[in-house]
Length: 364
Image (cartoon, rainbow, N blue to C red):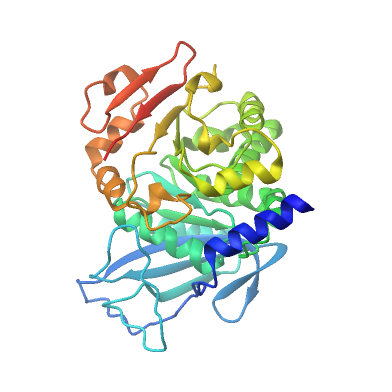
């Protein structure tokens, strides 16, 4: 109880009373306005519906399916979500939702996915702790814009409390949300013939691992074979738990990237409240990931993120996003032939262990 209280107070002091992001539906955004970028994102959520286009923090076993068309303003700055701050939303200044399409059945959803298929890999984003529905969705729209994701985009919105004091609630919600996430991934894999990349932030990484483990135990090899790669941003998972999860996932993803920072305050608080050792997103030695085929991407030296907790540096640092938006750099990072990356412009230093795990140190 004391740990929970201290963490709640600490996060409350750090985060203050910052207004939370909300969906603003603004169909007036012109389809012919080429200055505004559009990010079309298919979503699935096990949050309860609230109003016409929002979902709250309450849990439901019913999976809601939709597509949100998010407009990104021409004045957008790398790493930021420019939220409307008043009652006068402006597509030239703010992230806005231009259109929402809802799907009553999984069949309707699959048909819609097939009709918008591209030749690129699909990307599925899973938000982290203390997120509202709008915050997770718009954050993915921002990431997709900043790193130029051209394939189909999907977002799984699990029922986070959206409250800094709700860490234990969110850990339980991760377990609650596994079945809905596996169903979502099954539908994506069935409708999209290309590969699928999973990108998860914070405790969303725990949800991703639990779902992949669950699929493996069930023998859902069709789904696991569709997963081309996994990318974790500041994963909030106990290292030993992660290693046990990896042992049960067969086939394991060929490409597995973990973005970690020693300056992550949120993960240090998580380590304190759980009473365990370092979280996966704080790991500083690839030797601790022996016999696991992963790449540990050390981004500790990036200090220009707007996130005061340094918990989402890979999504908010303009310098790092500029690096990741370069397709050659991303190709180097995702290359399964690790030795081929030596001398790459994006890699400042590679530490190769004898047991599969690799540490890549990135510098601004």
